[in-house]
Amino acid sequence: MNKILLVIQREYLVRVKKKSFLYTTIGVPLIIIIFYASIIAIGMSGGHEKNKIAVIDEANLLNNGMEKAKDDGAEYVFITGQSPDSLKVSYKGKGYDFFLYIPPFDVTQNTTHIQLYSQSPVALNQKNKIEKAIDNAIELRRLQSVNISREQYRSIKSDVSIENKIVNGREEKKSVAGVASGVAFVCGMLIYIIMLIYGTMVMRGVMEEKINRIAEVMVSSVKPFQLMMGKIIGIGAVGLTQFAIWIVLIVGLQFLLPIFIPSFDPASIPHAGQMPGGTPESVSMLATMRTGLHSVPWGLIIFCFIFYFIGGYMLYASLFAAIGSCVSEDQNEAQSMVFPVMMPIVLGFVIMTKAIAEPNSPLAIFGSIFPLTSPVVMMGRIMYNVPVSQLIISMLLLVLGFLFFAWLTAKIYRTGILMYGKKVSWKEMIRWAIRKS
Image 1 (spheres, rainbow, N blue to C red):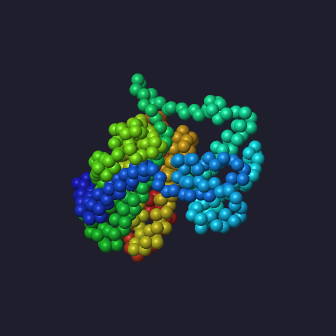
Image 2 (cartoon, rainbow, N blue to C red; image 1 turned 60 degrees about the vertical axis):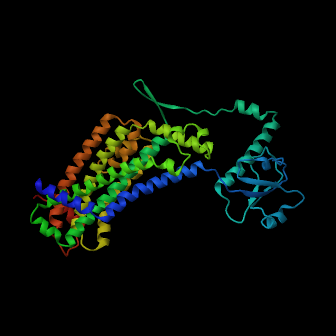
Image 3 (tube, one colour; image 1 turned 90 degrees about the horizontal axis):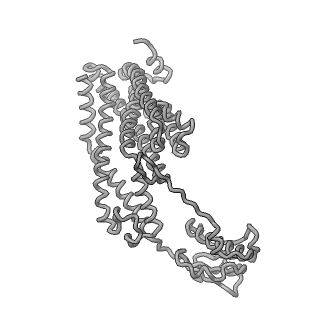
């Protein structure tokens, strides 16, 4: 046990003292908080682009009404006394950005031949606004044709919004489906990235020691299994250290947001009037996110994240370590060997995207229990009240899966770490794993 601790200490200190560790540990939170602040700043700012659009309305559909629109981000100028063919050639020279042509048509028909001319693709947002204005005009004409006013139509039309309440004893919390899905996706994505990054870090560390003949010296003092476990745990401790620092820095840096965005006050997000400069839609979105985050079971999320981070990392790190012990300087050989190990991780990510939409589907349940995919898939389901029995089974199988793969890969590691000048196949690795010691 003391020898494993010595290997852990060596692996941990060697990596923590590197400049790359310092750069990534401090740089990642800064990038995240800058990205976060940019999203808020962009969401709170209104649009400033103004487009000038020439309109020929031969159907008299709009009644020169679009020129009065205030929030379209465009100026509509209705042209009369000029043919569409001549204007679509000359509109740019007259200072217009686009040319909208509405030919005569029957508003009771679903098909029209309305055309928008431009010299480059029109921005999707602008195109949607123009289409919405035309749809509203057609809708109004159709209502008038059956003697129904817009006010009567609005009184008939239903726009139901169901509020989701989470009941926990006497406590009620408002849930927001989009926020729940976002938190589940981010957690699953982080586990996915962690297993890939730190797993390959273990593989590269083993490869470097084998290539530089350091492993031969170390194996003379410690058993191969102790060396492998010490390396896995040491690099895993580096990962946990980084995440702990990231959390502290991200939380701390959020308090600096009001300095860079003076109008941003988290306590006043629900009140649109308290955020000058922001549009009501963006303020409403931020308020909804804040409300949804309050309903997240953070205690359960953090506990499961740490458990599946450690469990998933330990399981896959043992597989990556076994591969690293069997390859030499050839990087192509390492990539071909690692592909079968990465397939379950990628499969887990694919199942997770399905599990967020259908958390209780058979595929989601299987993916959250099967040890090779459970670290990613379970984090995608954890927001949706996973039965305790399934959570316990998933955790138990993950622990057993790690012990099983650690036992197999240790036998591969013991042979592969001292083998040079031979290209090892998966068939040979399996033979090493199943042979009796």
